[in-house]
Image 1 (tube, rainbow, N blue to C red):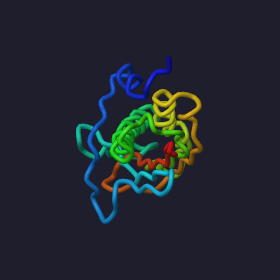
Image 2 (cartoon, one colour; image 1 turned 45 degrees about the vertical axis):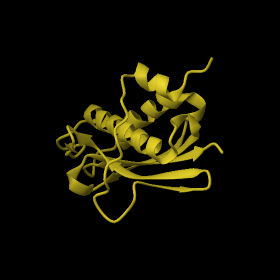
Image 3 (cartoon, rainbow, N blue to C red; image 1 turned 180 degrees about the vertical axis):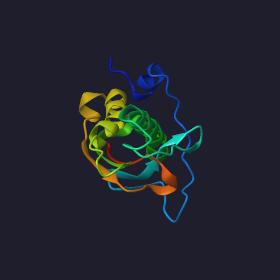
Image 4 (tube, helix red, strand yellow; image 1 turned 90 degrees about the horizontal axis):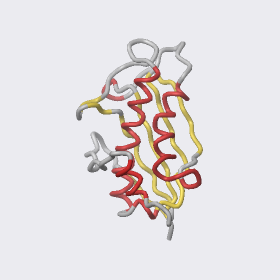
Length: 155
Protein backbone atom coordinates (compact mmCIF):
# COMPACT_ATOMS: atom_id res chain seq x y z
CA UNK A 1 0.00 0.00 0.00
CA UNK A 2 1.39 3.41 -0.92
CA UNK A 3 1.66 6.17 1.63
CA UNK A 4 -0.39 9.28 0.94
CA UNK A 5 1.14 12.73 0.90
CA UNK A 6 -0.80 13.55 4.07
CA UNK A 7 0.63 10.48 5.85
CA UNK A 8 4.14 11.69 4.95
CA UNK A 9 3.35 15.18 6.22
CA UNK A 10 2.13 13.69 9.51
CA UNK A 11 5.26 11.54 9.79
CA UNK A 12 7.37 14.67 9.26
CA UNK A 13 5.37 16.60 11.87
CA UNK A 14 4.18 19.14 9.31
CA UNK A 15 0.84 20.91 9.51
CA UNK A 16 -0.14 22.77 6.36
CA UNK A 17 -0.50 26.51 6.83
CA UNK A 18 -3.32 28.55 5.29
CA UNK A 19 -2.67 30.49 2.10
CA UNK A 20 -1.00 33.82 2.81
CA UNK A 21 -2.77 36.94 1.62
CA UNK A 22 -0.83 38.49 -1.29
CA UNK A 23 1.07 41.64 -0.34
CA UNK A 24 0.66 43.29 -3.76
CA UNK A 25 -1.26 43.04 -7.05
CA UNK A 26 -1.09 39.30 -7.74
CA UNK A 27 -2.79 36.03 -6.81
CA UNK A 28 -1.19 33.20 -4.82
CA UNK A 29 -1.63 30.66 -7.63
CA UNK A 30 -2.89 30.23 -11.18
CA UNK A 31 -4.06 26.98 -12.69
CA UNK A 32 -3.99 26.50 -16.45
CA UNK A 33 -4.76 23.08 -17.84
CA UNK A 34 -2.99 20.51 -15.68
CA UNK A 35 -0.35 22.96 -14.41
CA UNK A 36 -0.47 25.04 -11.25
CA UNK A 37 1.91 27.99 -10.90
CA UNK A 38 2.50 29.20 -7.34
CA UNK A 39 3.63 32.76 -6.83
CA UNK A 40 6.90 33.34 -5.02
CA UNK A 41 6.76 32.79 -1.26
CA UNK A 42 9.25 34.59 0.97
CA UNK A 43 10.83 33.00 3.99
CA UNK A 44 8.98 33.67 7.23
CA UNK A 45 9.93 32.98 10.81
CA UNK A 46 7.38 33.41 13.58
CA UNK A 47 4.97 34.92 11.04
CA UNK A 48 7.35 37.71 9.99
CA UNK A 49 9.78 37.96 7.07
CA UNK A 50 12.92 35.89 7.75
CA UNK A 51 15.36 38.70 7.10
CA UNK A 52 19.00 38.23 6.21
CA UNK A 53 21.61 38.16 3.50
CA UNK A 54 23.52 34.95 2.80
CA UNK A 55 27.25 35.52 2.99
CA UNK A 56 26.84 38.53 5.27
CA UNK A 57 24.69 37.81 8.33
CA UNK A 58 23.13 34.45 7.43
CA UNK A 59 24.89 31.13 6.83
CA UNK A 60 24.03 28.33 4.41
CA UNK A 61 22.49 26.06 7.09
CA UNK A 62 20.15 28.85 8.20
CA UNK A 63 19.27 29.57 4.58
CA UNK A 64 18.39 25.88 4.15
CA UNK A 65 16.04 26.09 7.13
CA UNK A 66 14.40 29.16 5.59
CA UNK A 67 13.99 27.36 2.25
CA UNK A 68 12.43 24.38 4.04
CA UNK A 69 9.98 26.71 5.79
CA UNK A 70 9.05 28.17 2.41
CA UNK A 71 8.45 24.67 1.03
CA UNK A 72 5.92 24.08 3.82
CA UNK A 73 4.15 27.34 2.93
CA UNK A 74 4.19 26.36 -0.75
CA UNK A 75 2.56 23.03 0.14
CA UNK A 76 -0.21 24.90 1.96
CA UNK A 77 -0.82 27.05 -1.11
CA UNK A 78 -0.67 24.04 -3.42
CA UNK A 79 -3.23 22.27 -1.24
CA UNK A 80 -5.53 25.31 -1.50
CA UNK A 81 -5.04 25.40 -5.27
CA UNK A 82 -5.88 21.74 -5.96
CA UNK A 83 -7.88 20.64 -2.92
CA UNK A 84 -5.94 17.40 -2.46
CA UNK A 85 -2.15 17.04 -2.59
CA UNK A 86 -2.57 13.42 -3.66
CA UNK A 87 -3.70 14.85 -7.04
CA UNK A 88 -0.17 16.16 -7.65
CA UNK A 89 1.19 14.12 -10.54
CA UNK A 90 4.60 15.77 -10.44
CA UNK A 91 6.38 18.76 -8.97
CA UNK A 92 7.77 20.20 -12.19
CA UNK A 93 10.04 23.05 -11.09
CA UNK A 94 11.22 25.21 -8.23
CA UNK A 95 12.78 28.61 -8.78
CA UNK A 96 14.70 30.00 -5.83
CA UNK A 97 15.98 33.54 -5.25
CA UNK A 98 18.57 33.83 -2.51
CA UNK A 99 19.33 37.24 -1.02
CA UNK A 100 23.11 37.03 -1.06
CA UNK A 101 26.35 38.94 -1.28
CA UNK A 102 28.23 39.08 -4.56
CA UNK A 103 30.76 36.50 -3.44
CA UNK A 104 28.28 33.97 -1.95
CA UNK A 105 28.10 30.90 -4.20
CA UNK A 106 26.01 28.36 -2.27
CA UNK A 107 22.53 29.34 -3.51
CA UNK A 108 22.05 25.77 -4.73
CA UNK A 109 22.77 24.40 -1.25
CA UNK A 110 20.34 26.86 0.35
CA UNK A 111 17.64 25.77 -2.11
CA UNK A 112 18.23 22.13 -1.18
CA UNK A 113 16.28 22.88 2.01
CA UNK A 114 13.12 23.14 -0.11
CA UNK A 115 14.01 20.53 -2.72
CA UNK A 116 14.76 17.85 -0.14
CA UNK A 117 11.47 18.43 1.68
CA UNK A 118 9.49 18.31 -1.57
CA UNK A 119 11.22 15.00 -2.35
CA UNK A 120 10.39 13.61 1.09
CA UNK A 121 6.73 14.59 0.83
CA UNK A 122 6.02 13.50 -2.75
CA UNK A 123 8.57 10.70 -3.11
CA UNK A 124 11.37 10.23 -5.63
CA UNK A 125 9.20 10.14 -8.77
CA UNK A 126 6.62 12.86 -8.11
CA UNK A 127 8.96 15.03 -6.04
CA UNK A 128 12.02 15.10 -8.33
CA UNK A 129 11.93 18.47 -10.10
CA UNK A 130 13.83 20.82 -12.33
CA UNK A 131 15.26 23.80 -10.46
CA UNK A 132 16.94 27.16 -10.71
CA UNK A 133 18.71 28.90 -7.84
CA UNK A 134 19.81 32.52 -8.22
CA UNK A 135 21.68 34.95 -6.04
CA UNK A 136 20.00 38.35 -5.95
CA UNK A 137 20.85 41.70 -4.37
CA UNK A 138 17.58 41.93 -2.44
CA UNK A 139 14.20 40.27 -1.92
CA UNK A 140 10.97 42.03 -0.83
CA UNK A 141 10.88 42.96 2.86
CA UNK A 142 14.55 41.93 3.21
CA UNK A 143 13.70 38.21 3.25
CA UNK A 144 16.63 35.84 2.86
CA UNK A 145 14.96 33.47 0.35
CA UNK A 146 11.99 33.45 -2.04
CA UNK A 147 10.78 30.37 -3.91
CA UNK A 148 8.09 29.68 -6.51
CA UNK A 149 6.79 26.29 -7.64
CA UNK A 150 5.15 24.72 -10.67
CA UNK A 151 3.26 21.43 -10.34
CA UNK A 152 1.39 19.12 -12.70
CA UNK A 153 -1.98 17.90 -11.48
CA UNK A 154 -3.67 14.63 -12.49
CA UNK A 155 -6.92 14.93 -14.42
